[in-house]
Image 1 (cartoon, rainbow, N blue to C red):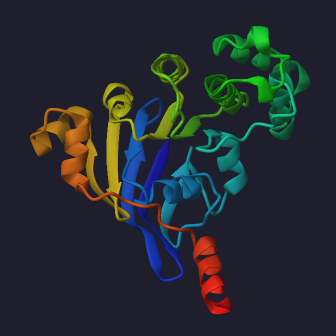
Image 2: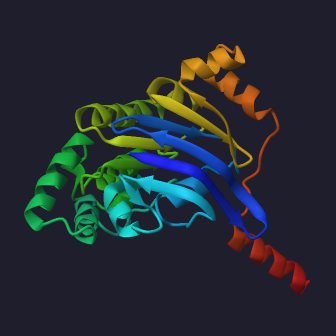
Length: 261
């Protein structure tokens, strides 16, 4: 369902992703882990056609992300790391807007919205404005919205960041059920190693733009001779605290500030 071959991305002279290859089969849950600035978000942006690779080939649902971007976009749903709901609309209105953007027919849209809001337990709150929702409710709605057009692939960029354990467990329960019952392929990033350990069928760890290890959670623990995935992750990526690497736009702004001074 996802195929990346020798994927590379440069920002000017900085290599954010360097010659990585991986594949994700249909219906599998794939965790893409790494420290801050390792290349996770850049990779997701290439997978979702927001960035073009500098080198290599990338396909989603059999479509090339550069040659067939529209087909790729129709194939996936996404939950961004940052909130993306319109807070001045109700939950139902947010869902309707998304369905219209994806050209879901009116009858199908109504049916899917009813089903999905019930799935994420927001059907009784559908007419409330998003600005009155809790963080967990917003996340659940974003997942429902991402599934409205029946995507083959669901991208989740740190979907449970800042949520309480009960909400995290609820969200992952939905995701796991989707992968099994509807064969939705899930590609996610997280800093919660326990989530990846429990949920992922396969894991890839990226550091400094390169994949340093991949396999099941158990195989990574065995490879590093560590009892937990978190300890295995640290053994593979080191103990140094990382800062986010600025984007090319941010670096240009920094240069302009320096020039002005």
